[in-house]
Length: 108
Image 1 (cartoon, rainbow, N blue to C red):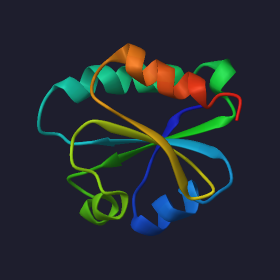
Image 2 (spheres, rainbow, N blue to C red):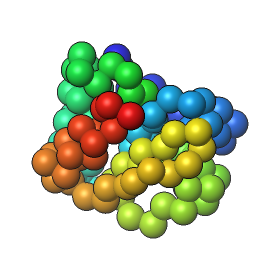
Image 3 (spheres, one colour):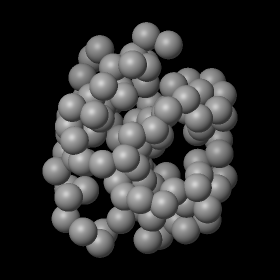
């Protein structure tokens, strides 16, 4: 499965309220560390053991209203949701930290 780009607040709310486990990457173009962790996020999204999870990303520069809704203060931030409820979040660029977040919700 690929990582889908969230283009609007309505799209974001529909996705996180879908009943599926959704992991959203919030990123910004300022600062280079996001590129490495974003590629890890893309790799995780393509693995068959995580096929039940929906992966999405939000460009913070283009979608400030989503940042306000989610309460994002640092980048990159990864949040896991189900039925509109935030399950967990990971802030930073550690591949191991991101993998742990994804693995935790693979069997929900």
